[in-house]
Length: 103
Image 1 (spheres, rainbow, N blue to C red):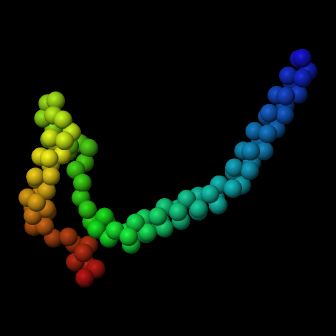
Image 2 (image 1 turned 60 degrees about the vertical axis):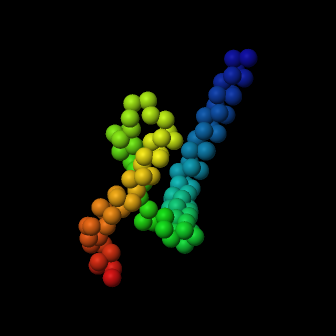
């Protein structure tokens, strides 16, 4: 049993070494694939829904900061939605220099 255990341990370490070398050799291709997949995924999303690129959301910190003690989610969402138009008019009072340079 002891010799069989050592043989299995050697076989396992050989498999781990082979998988590690294969992973190391394939990692540049996997990285390129992931970057392209990310790029084309977001490109497709922007093409399908152009408004998503400029949409604004409350950050988690902002939601936590504005939340009342023991406030339920639907009440918080309702209060935040009521403040959407004033917040957008406030944000539109500033000049977006990146858009000005493109135009």
